Amino acid sequence: MTDINRAQPPVHRRCKQQRRLWRSAFPDYAGLVAGAATPAIAALLDDGADHEILCYRHDPRAASFGEEAVAELAAAHGLAPEQIFKTLILAVPGGLAVAVLPVPSKLSLKAAAAALGVPKAAMAERTAAERSTGYVLGGISPLGQRKALPTVIDSSALQWDRVLCSAGKRGWDVALAPADLVRLTVGITGDIRAT
Image 1 (cartoon, rainbow, N blue to C red):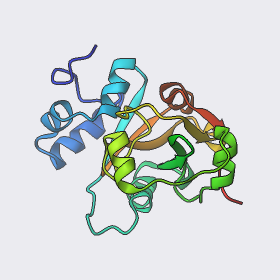
Image 2: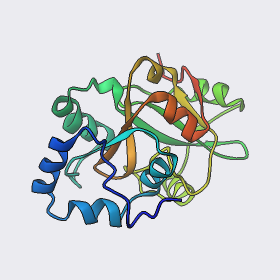
Image 3: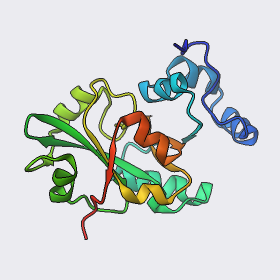
């Protein structure tokens, strides 16, 4: 098990320039990441999965957390908006589940329910989502959740070399291979976007 307090900043080794930029923008960068690593980052470090943490300054006035991530990360890192995924918590018969899909897409609750093998799904209440995952709204990651939930990831993720999802804190995203996202969430893939 990795000691989070001793872990190196969880930025991909090839990103020396990015680390220099971060250190100039965030003087307490090493302590910020190593001392306050999220459960999502801890899960990635424990697994050894290849990943890269991308941060931006979260605006508390932002109307949509996902749209803010797309606006901040897509152009700055040469990403397509469809590579940046949002994590939604669903209320399903018997509990909660997770749906992960591109930020620009709308979720089909019917398709998500079918993929999860349940008769119906609805959006979970904010308090239930935060209590179950251990994350705050806008920072809910599909990784390292307090309670493992059934997870469905939109199949469009598989067309990319890497996708981004929340790293467990508002303004923090993690880039990783879609296969690693599926494996680490013990998830399934399915077409869950509304048409």
